[in-house]
Structure formats: C-alpha cells, structure tokens
Length: 140
Ligand SMILES: [Zn+2]
Image 1 (cartoon, rainbow, N blue to C red):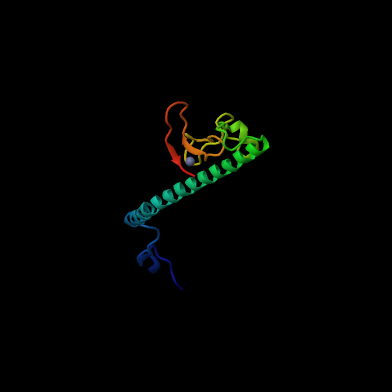
Image 2 (spheres, rainbow, N blue to C red; image 1 turned 90 degrees about the vertical axis):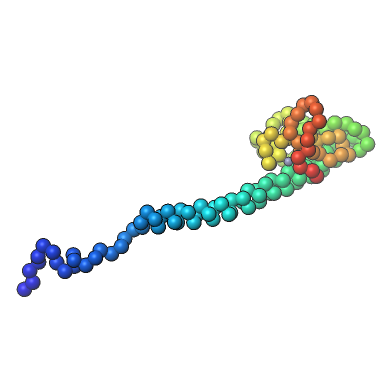
C-alpha cells in the first residue's frame, strides 16, 4: 500500500514552463513594430493614390454632366458661361454629405472643392478660395 507524503515524486520534478517571459513579449512587440513601420508608408501611399484616382473620376463625371447640362439647356460649347453645382447636380449622383452650394469635396481632403469651370473646359480640384488664384491639386 502506498502512502501519500507531503512531497510526492511528482512535486519534486521541475515545473513545466507555461506562459511567456517579459523578454519574449518585448521581442514580439518589437517585431510587430518593425513590420508596421515597413508596411504603413505603403498603405498610406496606396490610399492617397486611390483618392487621387477617385478625384479624377469625379471630375470626369462633372465634365459629362456639364455637357449634358449644355445640351439640355441649348448652351453653346463656346459660351463661357460659368457652371455651378446647382446646374449640374441633377446629372450627378452625390452623397448626402455634399455641400448644397459648393458641391462635393475631393476624396483626398474636405478642404478641397471642385471648380466646375465654364462649359467646354475641364473641371479642377482646388482649395476653396472665393477670391484669388486657387492652386489646382488634381488634374483631369
Ligand atoms: Zn482632388
């Protein structure tokens, strides 16, 4: 018959290593940090590129909308009549966040708005400045 003592043979064996040490966790965090440092700039660049492409697509749609507006209202292409968002908004599907007066803003920034320019010219994406010479950001 076996008697159980205070310290059996099982208790004398070294404990199995469970969990992680602080150094192991720090090494894993360091590796994740290095990988993020490598990957994040390319993610940001890809996002910027896609927003610029989306902006150019928007300007293409505005160009088509301006032509439709000109045809519906019999505006000659040579007339330098300024086009506003109110003129072309029926021809463009826009989001609810679109400014009723200025129209949609560029996907790159909420401070970039479109200048629709006269019929027969291409729209431009620029900082909203009521006066002065605005700097075009994205070009069609
Ligand atoms: Zn833009």
